[in-house]
Length: 150
Image (cartoon, rainbow, N blue to C red; front, top):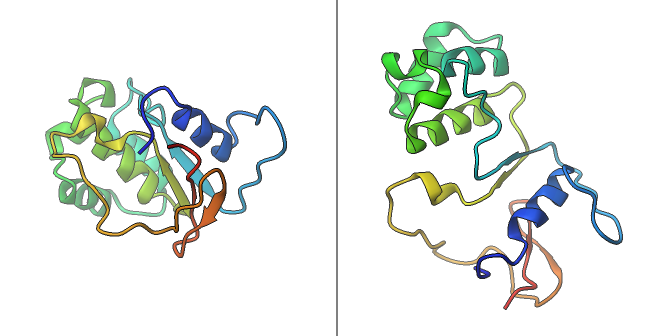
């Protein structure tokens, strides 16, 4: 993992199409969603359940409540504005709105997803890409990773 302030968030924004690259081009062929550190995909004034209903309008309210409960969000939490939730609860709500959307993204770009969780740092059991310093590598999961940092 590259050290802080090395442009990881900026790179994700370029891949997602929110920023233009300083040089060259960036083209993402998959339908992608960028979940940034601020969880900006959620409207802090609106209840989680309402936002999930908009993301998946064909699902029943009961199904959506069940999905949210599976993530640990109870009936009281999903009725509150998302801005009133704790950090980990907001992360779960944002993930629910992205992953249960219709259609779901083909590529999910997570920017510091552990910031809001009280979990020990996770490490993948094995890398999905071969290390290629300074070049893009293609993973078997159809995502890309930048391995240019040391």
